[in-house]
Image (cartoon, rainbow, N blue to C red; front, side, top):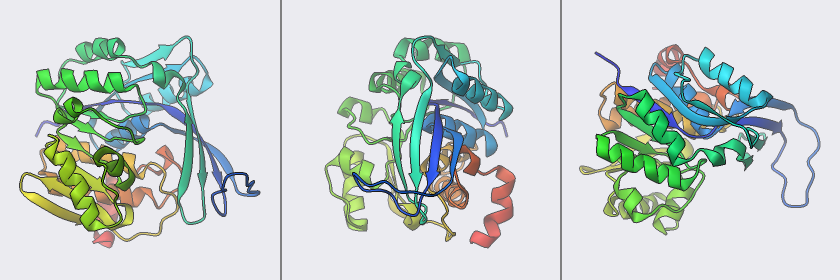
Length: 308
């Protein structure tokens, strides 16, 4: 079976991570903990996840002419990602994320977008024409919304499946929502998109229904350690998460989305694809960091039986 081609369009950051006992409140300084740098960015994480899990990955992104950008480009190439559309920005530095992770694995993140904010529709259009054959496009919201809007229009005209991970949380126009095949918000993101406060499963269903009725063809609400709530034309399905010891939740959502794209590219139905994505995300939270936590396909195969 020929694997379908996946193009990830999104951000590249260098993550600077501090491990702390707890996340500081405003005005508080927390001493201690370890520090390390790790390649990240939601687009980059998802592209790496696609590649490591066996997908045919092309990445469209923009990086600065600095050491972080050069390191990222080299790493993408080493991962086996098609890097022909890694664009250089001569005016802005590469994106940077400042991340704090507490002893329970929860995180707090602030991002300086840098070159990511300059990935414009005309840049992406040139890349998409250069790439040629595309079966699935995976998007996030760490690049300009006008670029996301353009890509969904382009994909609709080419009959390309579009997966949108609406993170970080932002409002999307009704026209854009109608062009999305699969949207994958977490509980906070689905609150913003739907206007429904999510305090439990019934609220999550109401919020998902709002998006579905606005024209999104499939809605997947990721609920962390609970699992993922899936809404399709056949109704709701709850896919439970595997039980693991959580070390760091950074990039778990990105791993979920990359894995989902890979499974769909292998022509799995949506529920088995979500099960595969939940398994990959569960394995990722057992490790520290963003791209350093992204599992390989053989790791999933090795761990699958212990998770079931």
